[in-house]
Image 1 (spheres, one colour):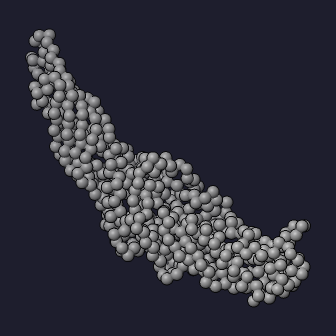
Image 2 (tube, rainbow, N blue to C red):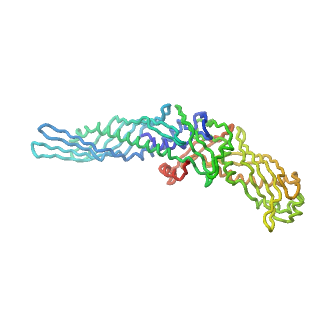
Image 3 (cartoon, one colour):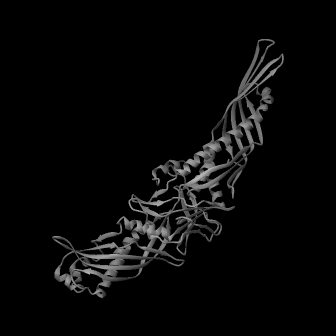
Length: 503
């Protein structure tokens, strides 16, 4: 049977590219596009069919009774009970997309059933009663199952509706065991039509109940996915899904936001046209991230005051003592001879990240305050404004998108000083060395950890490639699935409760 429940749940969070290009026009704030292709659906279907079958069986079917009265002779009562579908073998199944919704079809399906049978004959001519009972195995062949689902957006979550659902049984074979089963075989065969109808009704009811449950689960999907204790990804769906004959397109907000701060959208003035365009149509997975996503991470951490730190250890520790500046800033050494120093670095505004087809650039505005450590405390003596221009490379690290930065150039100017004017051309080589040996390694340490891509636990990106376009980074990849005790499809649903829901 087709696997509608788990399949559609994964569609809510699994990102698959179209054959060449799929574009969704954003009417709302959307910075991450999600496109699920026919190949992606087929991959998930093959993966999840076993899970779907195991969630359906064993399936109990109500007992069936049949009584026949014969004039002047008596009556016959036949009962089949404890009818259980214990095995389902799906011959073929497919998912078809269209304007009406998502059609899931399973054909050439075989269901194996077990049941108990009971036969009783009584006559009014004489007080005679004949009884017999036993068990039976039933094979239902040629089962056709189909359902059509509608998919929409309601209050930022996916809304699933059942448009059509049906099940058709083509052929039934009953084999009796126990008692004088050979004698009653013909009479029990009279139950074939009723058993077939019961199987159709039971499977149809199970599907309908499953869709209702799935709709509840989809609407309970988290709108906020935490990056850490202070930052979360806004996973709110915006705009209606776009269905074609070969793909489903979604859009999510996709920005990172601090829980204790307002939205960072004030930093983002972008024309948001979500686009997934993978050059290799055989890839299963495509994720398109607008540069606004990366700027939102930067703005969020800036708002949270994480982009400031004090440097008290560097490779050449002599540069953290005023003696090291005896000839560069003589007035500093004269006023504070042989005093230890700290460098207080803080960003004055969020970094600006710009993505082009050939480059990922970053502009960082920072203030470098020179602090002298005195027995009375820390004494700020001068502040230098820095404008650092760098470029970054990105890579796929597990299920994260990680990066590495290098500095292309920088400029500096004196913002204020308590020790008089500074000869900036003498200080510039020292600052450059500090940027290369302290600032860049610190930044790359955090960039190396990366930000998580929206991949469900248990799935792993494989053979991924990265593409950059105007204001976009695209990840095109295959995926693998490795079930484990902590990463399996049954674990997926209860695990969603750990996430916070947006209000």
